[in-house]
Figure 1: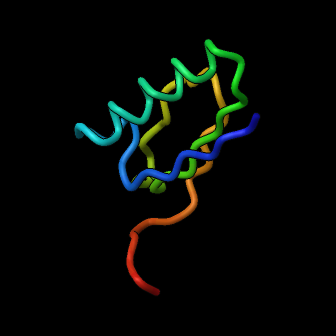
Figure 2 (figure 1 turned 180 degrees about the vertical axis):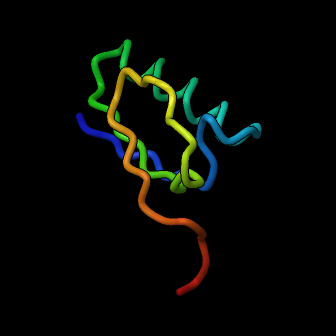
Figure 3 (figure 1 turned 180 degrees about the horizontal axis):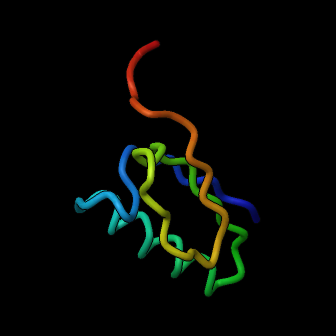
Length: 65
């Protein structure tokens, strides 16, 4: 099974939604699920932490457009 998690915030951005998404992904991966994350892009010069699954930084902001 493959799962794509979509989250407006994800580490290193701080917030409960991002923390919960990362925790859920780790648990799903431990169960054998292929997990990837689509999340907000990082500000220039900010490095993303290492992740055991692919994280796609797809947008700078979220909205209806």
